[in-house]
Length: 336
Image 1 (tube, rainbow, N blue to C red):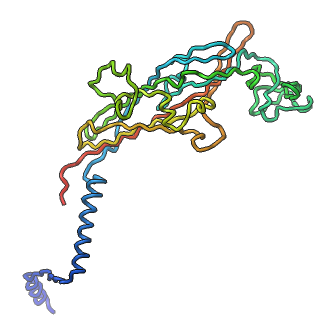
Image 2: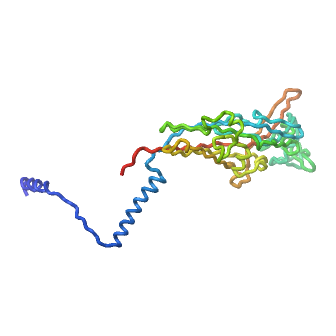
Image 3: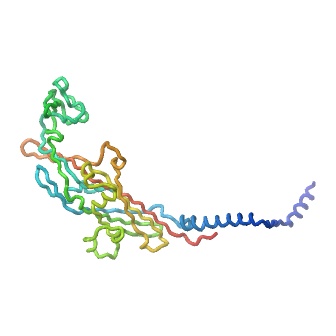
């Protein structure tokens, strides 16, 4: 076929048109199945996509938030060293932390230590002995308290341990003074939280703006009646985490405070509310026995006479704050 014939053929086909052929199937069974499938597709988009998933809405990907915490309350401890009053400056230590706060619930004190020689603690691996040959002078145990002098001395009763040059008496059950802070479960924790969704220009806090300032002086948190009073008794946090104060005071512990905001900004701002939940985070919550709880040691030195110090092991309730803000808003009419 030549060039001229091809052009003439294409020109003729250019003016042709096609139309689909519709076939009507007059079968009641197939028609019912066809309409059911159509209905299921419509219901999927109407209920799941639009109502449940709200796929027509935009979501905030980079929410901003801030948290401030303050403690209130006075505790008392009573040991052989006497009665001690604990205020906020005493039991909140360290005073500030990134997304955490710590509360002392129990102390174990080793008083009047000084650099001297004394028996090593029987709890230290490799410290027990039967003669001086078992104690190598100048050697130090990894988990020990000091430098071995080469002597095997009586620890208590018939138990002997290697003598060490250390801060004496070393920490053990014989020299320590144990005290629990009574009334610590009545301490209150003020958690001030605010969120901001920059994409939508929306800001809200967990304290109502128009509230009387005196309201926060007397209220405590209740999810039903005082949602916007973020003052939590320590006993409430411990209870909601599934623990008891007695158990927590034995080893200390780490509690999680989770603040969640799930806000549908197509609704009124009053519908955007905080939700609080609490749980224990350390190994006790997983049924573990090793390294339970949370504690640390600190010491105070005196220069009067020979250098002495007092060592305290503080068992603490450490709370970690987690924020889960999520905001979404409709992006306009959805056309289909």
